[in-house]
Image (tube, rainbow, N blue to C red):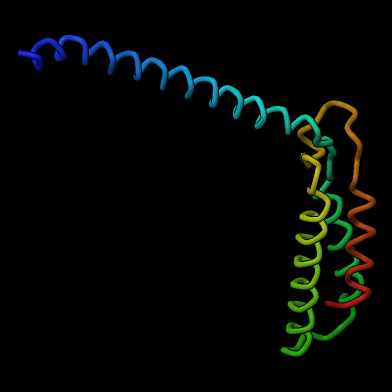
Length: 131
């Protein structure tokens, strides 16, 4: 008979525990989401004109190889140069993105700081210094 007396109270106790657990989880998720979204405010928004960087490199590339006769050795040299440029571009953009949000210049209307020339300069330095 004692068990029958405890049974009606057990759903109330379980409900109380469930309510307390829900409140704790709500507070924790609110604190975590507040922390997550507030840390994004520390990042600077900058723009990058990637098409300009690629177009500048294309012009340089065409000028360099314009008057050279095609051969397998020339093709290997061109492929190597393209690979080095691509690797340098990726690394510089990765380094620049630390602490910043980089957006394509064509898609931004506001006056965000343009890092195109800086990135272009750092790529050139990286290519001069070698892999």
